[in-house]
Amino acid sequence: MDSLGCEKVFPAVIGSPPELTVSIGEDQQILLGDRIRLEAVSNRPVNYEWTTTDSLDCTNCSSVNAQPLGNVVFSVKVVDISTGCEAEDSVNIVVIRDRKVFFPSAFSPNGDGVNDEWSFFAGSDVDQIITFRIFSRSGTLVYQADQVNTPDLSIYWDGTFNGKLMDSGVFVYLTEILFADGEQLSFQGDFTLLR
Image 1 (cartoon, rainbow, N blue to C red):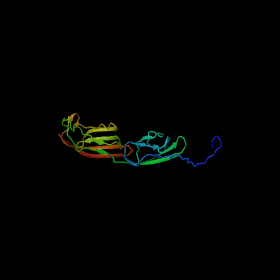
Image 2: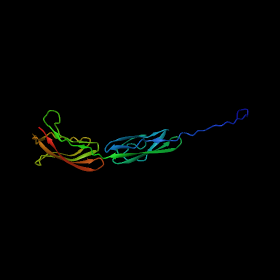
Image 3: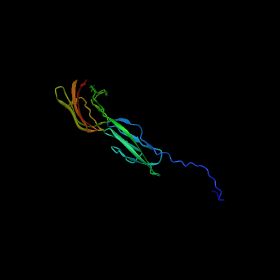
Image 4: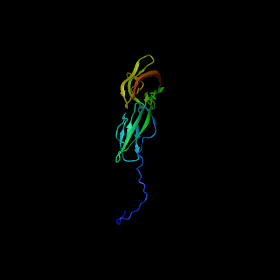
């Protein structure tokens, strides 16, 4: 109706706002000890509430970092700031327990700067070296390291015992390793010292 009282009728469509959505992405696999970044993406301004808080660094952020010790489903709920509408999404994270530990078969401590120390290599899933011992073939303990924490893991043997060079030969190692998920495993084997 205008100011003179004339009326006109015409159709009008009042649209509703787009449906509120949130997405964390696809399910993923990670190795035990690895960190993962999760990003919740919404189509409107929202508040975030992570309902699975296991190992998360933030519970109300759009982006979070996590370091889960086992399989977990992370869920996030978002609430539209202006309307109060809610949406949820979740993502399944599978943690692979691959136990990444590598023990070299030989080393040559001859001072040439190449392969002069014997050490083993551990993945990010290792939490602590509880015990580490190297024995000669006759059973003499020639090297020992205990309670070595990550990320240090500085265990190196230079091929000496009591300040003297050891002769070429086969040596035996024995170690107990604590992994990030609390499992403790023993590893043993042998390697060769080459002069």
